[in-house]
Image (cartoon, rainbow, N blue to C red; front, side, top):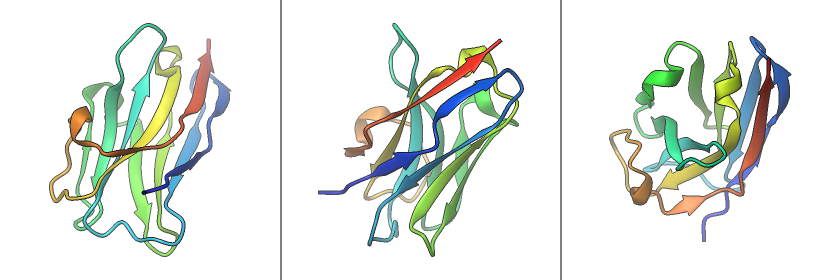
Length: 125
């Protein structure tokens, strides 16, 4: 079983920043893709950003391009989502997810086998 530990959510005002973390204690990401999904109230869970750990290649949803950055720290086995210029519409529960056999970044929700517990991000106007 792959355990994903998320942290970093919170409440900010419009234009603020937050950084989310997704850690896999004691294990490397190697062949994984690690992604962030969000689920706003009343909506489906949607992909936000993903990184392919083997290559560092990334992919972003159009709604966050230029504002969010996904990165990895191999020494800490942690993937980060830096969120800048936050908007009220970014308010959602954010989930870290891992696809264990992934070489090209993607946001196909059903292909992710492991999920974190979620962390809430609230952006007020």
